Amino acid sequence: MSVPTKAGAIKVGKIEGAVHRLTADGRSAELKLGDTLIETDTVTTSKGALVVLVFANGASVKLGGDSKLKIEEFKMDPLGEDIVVSKLESEPTVSKTSLNLAYGEMVGDVKHLNKDKGSSFNITTPVGAAGIRGTTFRIVFRPSGDGKTFTFQLSTADGKVAFEGTVQAPSNVEVPKDQELVVTAEATVDPSTGSVQVTKVEVPAATTTISAEASAQITQAVTAAITEASKNVTITTNDQQQAANTDTNTNNSTPQNTGSGNTTTEEKKSDTPSETKKSTDSTPTDNKPAANTPGATTTNPSLTPGAGG
Image (cartoon, rainbow, N blue to C red; front, top):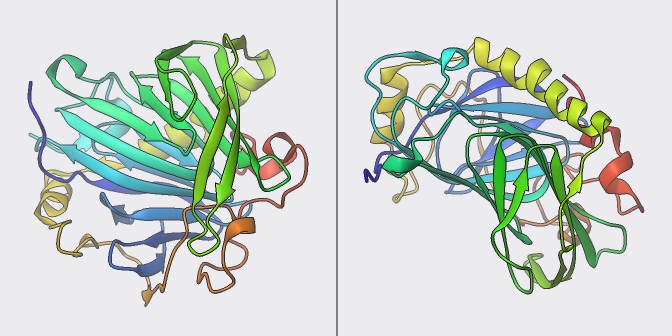
């Protein structure tokens, strides 16, 4: 099996509201349409904002408001030609993708992966990891209301996702089309770093059927945001070469042609929701998860798939 070793290119295909990128060396800048990101970049969205990230392997994800996503790894083999992402039915080469959703909501559309050649696409949260197999999905990870309880929701609108839990959660839970897995977790928060440490996970014995409305919301998010965004994204061999030339191990993680504005150095970032963050966090105050109110995972309009586009 092929093991890709070069960093891949990721483009911003759609953006609404305030969305920021934090690089591995602590620089922060507001993202703009057409900017390029690579592995080790972290993306945060303010309340009501959204961003669609289009990957050179054909995958696209929509990050909703009050969310934080780190691109831990995105490597792929070189492109043989320029690609229009919307025209792809399967990934053009072999790739390895590892994303970390610290908190928030994301909807994704992943093209058929060359799994027999070693391709993978995984999304990690503090509760567990989702292995995407070429599918349409939604993941939400939010505090439930008391600052100690968190809700993880994984819904699959097409294809199949494999959930592998952490702590006391079972592994290899299959979440097929039109099914969802809702997990409740207890966690402690480190007062010095703000990091969330999950101590207990309650996983139901079986998945449940998602409602027709929920399925339609996921489909709407893909159609109105992801599909539309990918139509306007061409990733060239030069884009991919620039990403591949970036040495992510020497803090040189800002790609060329980003189009971003001025950058500033961040003192420290926390991978936790706003209620656990220190007041010294330099992320803009509106770039926080929703307030801890019961039902925040379902009633906040900014968390609804397709909201804002």
